Image (cartoon, rainbow, N blue to C red; front, side, top):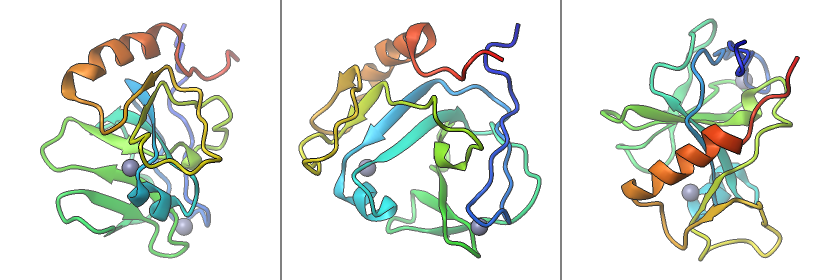
Length: 155
Ligand SMILES: [Zn+2]
Ligand SMILES: [Zn+2]
């Protein structure tokens, strides 16, 4: 049985950008940094770490925004919805589960930058870091995610 039930339908708010997810995420994360608060206009960002080629391109051409040229924040050119983040040369990308038709199952296993949270922002993440996670932090978190992390509901 395909536990992940891929591909997952995914689109922006207005529907002009369609990028179904074709590869399973390796971990889920929430980030409390002030940049993510600005990007989401919310308490924190939620993402699924996907293989960099984990999308099928169907419709629309996201544009790059954000502050830092080396971190490509991708937005819908029409509705300006923040969709995903690519870091050139990195094997993974950050996918915003808000693009999913049903993101109700998505919850973070890791949370980062807990030194900058909004007081209302509690995530229940199992691995919590004051700053950004270090490379060696990902192994245990990925194992936890694979074992008992966020999974889509069984059909
Ligand atoms: Zn859109
Ligand atoms: Zn952040």
